Length: 445
Image (tube, rainbow, N blue to C red; front, top):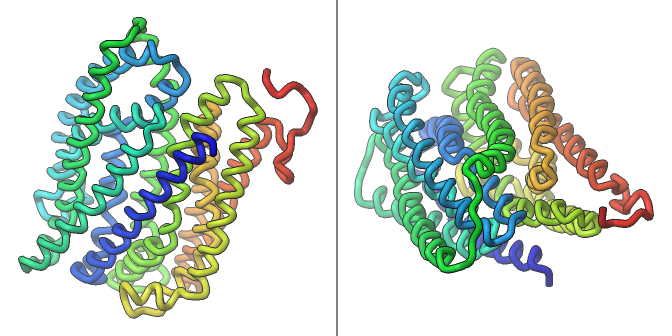
């Protein structure tokens, strides 16, 4: 079995266990927060994740790509420069966040401490990103998998203990739920930094060559800037989406309270269930970036073709059965959260959205490995322009409401999948139908 498949299998198993725990976490949140509380919690998370994204600056991706492409002798010098850059970047971001956070109106309806917990996340995410990128580039997936699973277990344990021992009002309950996320993340940061420190000390005793800070910045920025732009746009759309959906539903004739509850059903129940199998896609993503980067740097087009075939095959094998289960067993699945036929209907209507995103996630990693970050960004931009336009237009109509919103989401997923897939096939010279090479030319160029 190849290193790619071994690493992917390890991540899939560990992430599956983590997602099982995440599933239980969301069930606990649904029980403790209620429909409105869950809707408020899910509405603020995209904004939080946008700030977290800025803190990471996509260093895990850019560092892993650099580590995979460059010889070991350059790693020590590169990491030293990255650590210094991260210290400066984190200090600036903390100052800006401390000034801007009180001015963000989105947090006004939440507990006053909520926004400062988000600020606390910034240095944690920034420095753990270095360790994550290093382990990804070295394909030491056991450490990434262990960290992912451990964070989920810790969050669940904290949730159960705190909500069993104490009673909270809604505002405090949402704050406590977020505290469990921050607390579990803090433990993982300590673990990752400790493991990274051990390996960094080992690098000091090996032969190394110096790289200039300018060279390191250029290599990292060439990946981090467009990839961060892509992720920022993605996070912005996720941050805007809850408000867009609720505004559209209110314009269709629903009250604001019902609109919030329906969004809670969509994001907290249907999305939680539908994206449960996406742990496999995310495992592929983590493995694909360094693997595709190295193969493309070596101009090994045969390996690139083989990897694409494997990714499409794996995704088809788990994706199709998964959405069939969602469709035919929607009601018993959603009843584990709330006894509501509305959530079951959302889950059934969203099956194309879920299935296509199982393909989109690894294909996006493939594009990054090929150096096509700008293409990935433009694809995401245009698909979301169409998606959001349809979501608002159809969702505002009384005859469609949330069904119209879901039609827009499905349409955007179709467009994004096709653009990613056709671009990859063209870049590596394979047929988009058969995934076979279009010519008999030498595969190593």
